[in-house]
Amino acid sequence: MSKQWKTAKLKKLMEIILLLKDEKDLINFFRDLCTLEELDEMSTRWQVVNLLSLGAPYRLIAKKTGVSTSTVTRIAHWLENGEGGYKTALKKMSE
Image 1 (cartoon, rainbow, N blue to C red):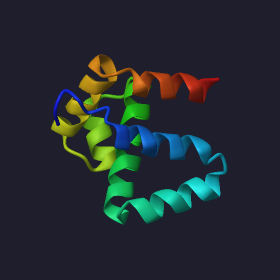
Image 2: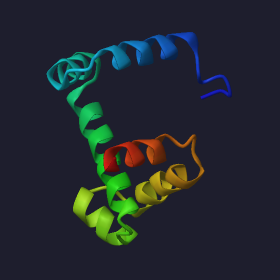
Image 3: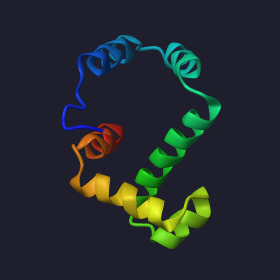
Image 4: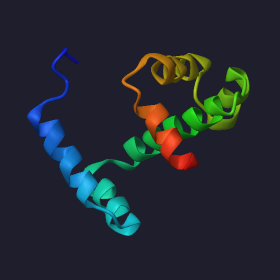
């Protein structure tokens, strides 16, 4: 992806997501938008983030989630060096 990843069409998608306050509506929207595999992958990534935030060892996370340790490492990298989205979401969850 290029440097200009925050495109107008991405921002429009985020606007719609922000409008969907009801969990059922949000789940239905994502089911229509994504394949089952994409939903599973995103859910697994979020599970990895949560386990990383608890300090779980990479190998345990890999075993528990079924992803490779290289995927855990990549997610950990984005948790620490990304745009801050994971950290913001974790903070909001704990509030």
